[in-house]
Every structure is written in C-alpha cells, then in structure tokens.
Length: 33
Length: 531
Image (tube, rainbow over all chains, first blue to last red):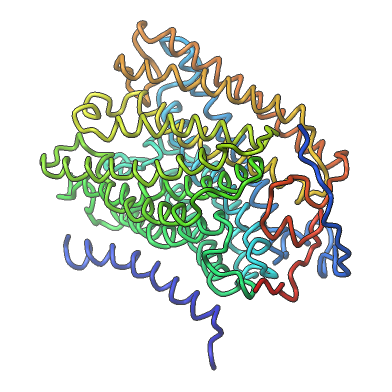
C-alpha cells in the first residue's frame, strides 16, 4: 500500500524522535556510557 | 485610537456545523483544528491558574523570614510542581493552541495534517496534569526535587516521583505528536503560491520549534526513563551510590532544557512578529533575516546547555566554550529585537491592548535577555548560580516574555476566534496591572540574588526581608490581575460587540484577508490559490 505524502513525512519525523530516545538509552545502557 | 476597518465582507456558504456530535462529546471527539486549539488554550489557562496558586503559596511563605505557612518539604513540592505545571502545562500548550488555531488558516490549509492524532495529542494532556496533581496525595507527597528532576534526589523520592515521571512521558508524547503534526502541516499543506518565504513569521517560528521539539523531547523522555530504571530496575545511570554519575543527568537534562527555553520563546517571537507590524501598519522589517535569526537561535541552542552547570566542576576549556557559544546567541536575538524596533520606526502606531503587551514584551524580554548575558559569563555566574538573580532572569524571559506574548496573541486574535470585540478599556487595565505587578515581583529579586539569597529555600536571613516582602506583594497583585483577564475574555465571548472581518487595519495574513469574522468551522476547502 502506497503511503501518502503526509504519512511519509510523519514517519520520517517520528523516526527522528525515536532515534533520539533509543539512541540515548542505548548509548548509556548497552554501550555503558 | 481605533484601528477598526471593515472592508472584507465575505459570504461563505460553508459555515458553522460541528460534525456528528453535540455537547461534551463534540469536544471529546473533535478533529477540527479550531476546537482543539480552543481546548489547548483553555487547558493552558487552567494550568496557569493552578501553577500560579502554587507560586502564591511560595510567595506567602517567603513574605517573612522563618517558617509560617508550610513545612519545608511541602515548600519544595510547591516549587517543583509550579515549575513543571507552568512549563509543560501552561506555556507550551498555550502556544500549541495558537498553532492549532492559526497555522492552517495562515497557510491556507483546511485543517492539520493528522486531525485524529491532533485530538489524541490534546486529550493526553489532562491525564498528565491529573498525574501531577495526584502525586500530592501519595505517601511522601509530590516530588520536591525541583522542576529539573535532578539525580540523586529523584532516586530517593516516594511514589509521587513515579507519577511525575509518567506525567513527563505523557507530556512528551503529546508534544512530539503535536510537533510532528505541525511540521507536516506546514511542509505539505500550504496553499498553492504560499511558499515558505511567504509564510507569516508565526508559522516559521513554529516550523523551527517543531523540529526542536522532535529533537529534544525524546532526550528528556530518555533521561526520566533512565531515572525510572534507576529507581526500580537496579540500574545506576545517575545514582552515585551504585557507581552512576549525577552530573551525567544534568548534561542530558540541559541538552533538552536549553532548547526548551527556545521552544517556549520562538512561538512567542512569532506572535510578536505578527502583532507589531499590524499596529505599526508596516510590513515586518527584515523578514528574511528574522527567519535566519530564528534558525540560528535554534541551532545555537544545542551547543550551550552546560552554561546551566558552570559550578559542577567542568574544565576551564569547557566553561570557555559554553560561555562563548552562549554569548553568540545574543547576535541573532539582537537581530530580532532590532527588526521589531525598526518595524515600529516611522510606523503609523496605535497602542491597543495587543500592541501594549507586545511593547511590554519587547522591553521586558530584552531586560531578561540582558541578565541572561550576565549569567552566561562564567566568573559572574559562579557567584550568582542558584540565587534569586537566576530566578529573576528566567521569570523575565518566561513569566513576562512568553506570557505577555500569549496575552498579546489572545487579544489580537480574540475577535477572529469569537467574532466579538473585547473591552479595550479593561484590556488596557489588564496590561498595566500585569506590567506593574510583574515588575514589582521580579525586579527586586535581582537585588536579593546579588545579595546572595539562594533559590528553593522556605526560610532566609533577616537581611533579605524587604526584597521578599515587595516581591510577595507584587506576586499577589499579578495573580489577582489575571482574574481580570478571565473576566475580559468571558465578557467578550458572552456580550462583546460584533467584530468586523478585519478589526486591525495593518493585519495582512490570510486569516484576516481571506476569511470572515468569526471564522467558519471549516475553512479553506478548497484551498485558495495565492500564485
């Protein structure tokens, strides 16, 4: 199913937010700071 | 005095139907950006009054030295919740409310890009607010750690801390969804011909703010998640007793916290950039430089966080870097202030209530900015850190800067929202009472701070008594003045005179030039062609 232009933009922005959140926790939890 | 004209009568066939539901369910189920904007604005006002009541408890206790009204633990809970509620419950939702109401109308869009998610973004907020309030009734009460939620105190608090962490998660989710919606709306739903560089500056500041929120709210969410795992799942990110580093929390928090200042300030800049040209009857001076200055402020806000932490023991090279980076922000901020003044220069000025609040913002926000410049200097900040000088500084930026811009915006767009004019005389009374009392409250705190009075204490030496008495009198005066604001708004809604389509002669954005007053429930369907 083709995504709408809005859905594509929203998913890109949401993935940026998710990258910040999980990136922070992974950096200090998995990689030990 | 009056700037009222009525030269844009429109006869729009589509108007005020509200979809399938009436009554309360209309508001619960609505996906209309105007309804959701209205709910954001009322929610933020309620939170403003709740947070304000907490401020009055703080100021009542500080009226005299010694302990009179509340015990120190409850005092700390008050300072914590006052900060959290004002920042996340009052100021941020207020500007999201403005964004919901105005961005679709200013870019010629029929609604927000994700209308259902917009409803969800709002309805998360009351539950988050409720969690913060409920935390007072848990064993140990609400957390008394300060709005910054610093470790290791956060590890030691009772269950109220967990409720607060969940509340911050919910508030963060709401903000992230809201900002995704705003950015997508601006990027994808502009009317034909509404290029980015033709957008009203309010939309530009929100586009930049949206990106800031998407970048830093997850960082706060990560920090409080790590705090939660420290409390309950055996980790030691921040708990020194387990080998963690409390200063690490401060770095992460302020990586969110300083951009947060601009998340609040940039939309305020946007409102002011709409109001000043309208009452100067001139286009905004230096539009492009305003866009670039806003972007520069946002980018610089990512590299200055540790100026909140000069006293933690960082290397001198670190202090110097953050000092120079912080002072750099004065340049784009100065560009903005210069452009606002240049817009007014040789303009055909009138001073209705929105313009009064905009001028109040201009003068007092600049004052707060200057004390920020003072605090950016390491040798001075080490003396003033955690004193009332800092409290005075950030209240000039937040309590006067953001809130005055909010008032300017409400008075400016109230005729468009309600179709009625507010009482100009009472509006001006509200401005003067607010301006006088807010300065009585916070200006003297500079002196208390320079004399060495620490923040977040319920008791103080006798030498600080005079400043505190004056400050408390001002706080109660400012609080009471806001009841007048509520009266003015309610009076406008219930019995205001009918507003013309374009009550402000110099207003030139689409909501004034292409839409009737009050705006119909559904607008810009189909979109206008602006090419």
